[in-house]
Length: 213
Image (tube, rainbow, N blue to C red; front, side):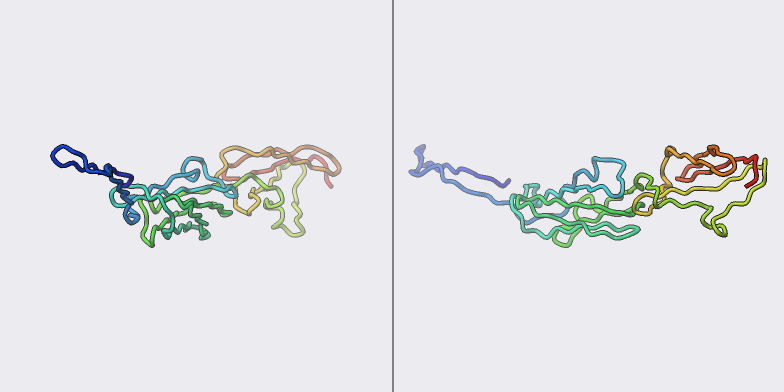
């Protein structure tokens, strides 16, 4: 084990002058297979795009002694829908901190290397969910119609769909609850349309008009 040791030397029961002698045992080279990874990236869930997370890498030598110094080459990145590099900071005490933030939802692999060799626990599979619905980025099926105009018949149900997206443009297809959605129809008559949550971030809006116009 690394650390401070004392050596006692005696001859015929008498301790030599100057005892105890001090000996410092330093840790060996960093062993990637002994590293430990932790941090908010594993502790907070579910992971959501746009949020910043941290990963901590603690380094040890082949005997499990903690590295008490910095200077090793630690690199980390995310491989997924869009590859992201993780910025790693050397804390100069044998530990390293990486910060990451991604704007694209989906499954990723986080790879961490120590001195160009993958550390224990790498790769780690992560899944980032889309963020909250951001109305300016939402899509509506009406926009695909000529002049964005829906033609319907009096007394017959008409409908269209709305597809929600977050502020980064990700489809909110993993939402398991509905947004507070209101649709108001104005014209010769004024009324609220019915909104049905279809799941996967999609909504169906339906209404019946009793007046032409």
